[in-house]
Length: 128
Image (tube, rainbow, N blue to C red; front, side, top):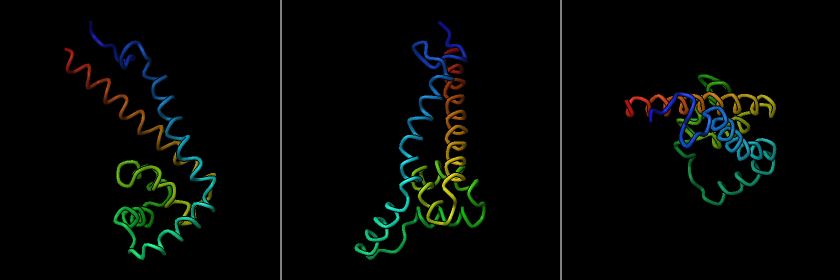
């Protein structure tokens, strides 16, 4: 049988699948945003012990921040640095908690939609 556009697999609606995926990602990012002060202190102590220069991921995140700001970091973060590092970098670079939460949530929703639709349409192409 042909796979319809509104189904991912086994009869699960793509919209229900997207909602579950977005909330599962958000549930791991939100504690980073709202527990930022503790995480910042822990991270600084950890970096002092390692005595290493900043990582390439962190440098990439700072470059995105300087060029595009919070919206750019949030939207490009999942692809270039990872969503958790993007949220942490945003907070480190001075973004407000509410703005970071909104932009990270929007970013997760956009990327979930993009990859969900790409998966569905990609599967439709192979079934025909």
